Length: 254
Picture (cartoon, rainbow, N blue to C red):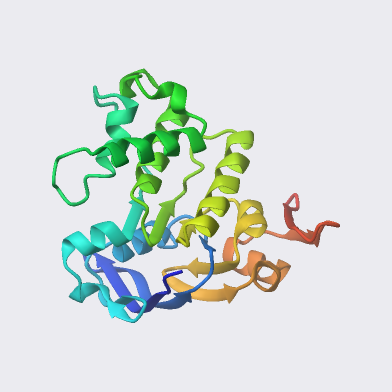
C-alpha cells in the first residue's frame, strides 16, 4: 500500500487563503477528510491530484509528486471530483473505458474491456453498459463516475463526496465495495465526506479540516467526540458506540 504524505500545503484563491500549512500522512486503507462547508476539503483533493498548484509538497512513498511526469501521476492517482459526469452522448461502457486511457494511447485492448466490465459488475451497474450517459439518473451517473475512478487501478484513490446523489442503501454498498477494493488491490483511499457516521464506520483514520487547517487527526474513536464536533461544526451532539464497536454521532436539537 502506497503511503501518502502531505507537507505544509498552502493555497489561495484570488489572494484569499483556503489551505493553511496542511500536513498529514495517510498509510491506512481508508482515510476520511471531514469538516464544515468551506473548510477546504475539495481544494485539498484537487491539490493532491495535481489540478491545483499549491505551495508545499506531496509525496507518494517518499517520491515528490512534483518530480513525477504526468503519465506516472495519471496512473498512480485517480481523482473523483464532486461533480457528476457530464450527460455526454456516449455509452456507460465507453465512459468507463476512458478511465483506462490514461496513457493517451487511444487504443482499447481486450484486458481493458475485461477490467471495465468487471468494474461495472462490482458496482452492480453492468446492465447499464450500453445505455447512454444522457439517459441516466443523477445517482446512476455518479456510479459511472466512481467506476471511471476505480477502473484505472490506481495506487491512490481520491474521492470528493462520492455518496452525492446516492440513496442510503447505495451509500453503504459503495463503501463496502471501496473497503473491499482498497484491501484487495492495496489502494490507499482518501475520501472527503460530510457524513460523520459514514466516516466513523468505514475510515481507518480521520483528518479534520476547519478554516483550511488540520485541527485534528487520528482513528475515529479518538477524533469523533462531543468537543470536536461543537468546536468545528458549532453543534451539540451525542457520540456513542454500538455493541459492534461502530461510533454513532447524533446531533442534538438546538
